[in-house]
Amino acid sequence: MPVPLDPEQVELTGMLVEALATSRASSMDPFALHTAIIQTHPHLKTKHNKKEWLNLIPVVLEAGHARCGMFEKVHSSGTNGAKQARWFYISEKDEDRERAGLLEELMPKQKRNETKKYKQYYYKPLHKLTRWDSEDAI
Image 1 (tube, rainbow, N blue to C red):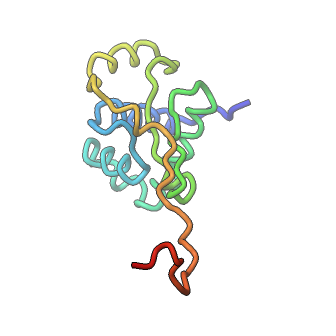
Image 2 (cartoon, rainbow, N blue to C red):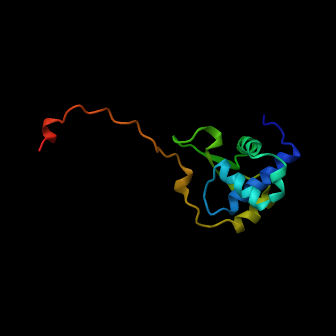
Image 3 (tube, rainbow, N blue to C red):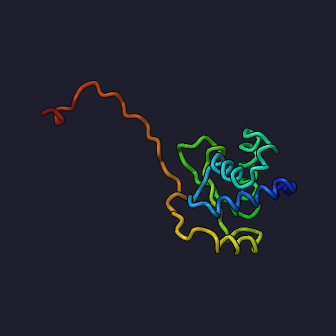
């Protein structure tokens, strides 16, 4: 059973929803979310330092995912855990139907679904070739 959110986490959930829903990007990592939230709500700069925010944001995103599925994570081979994973908002699963309805009207209509899927960006290096194959010779 998910742990209930404290008032600060409830407020942050709303700010994350706002940032994800109104962004032109279809998914954002915690660094981009932090930047968007601080630009929208500059008074929050003094509430926590950047490191604390970057620890708190993934916790709130994971809690929203576990609670109702309103946040989804884009799994990628090139990311280093939850701090670099990209997240997106699913208004249909938002537990606050009034907020979801309002944001559906404000959300950019053409978000790319391709950026919400797993991508293999890093490949193992090839073995070192010591000589050419005879068929590759000129």
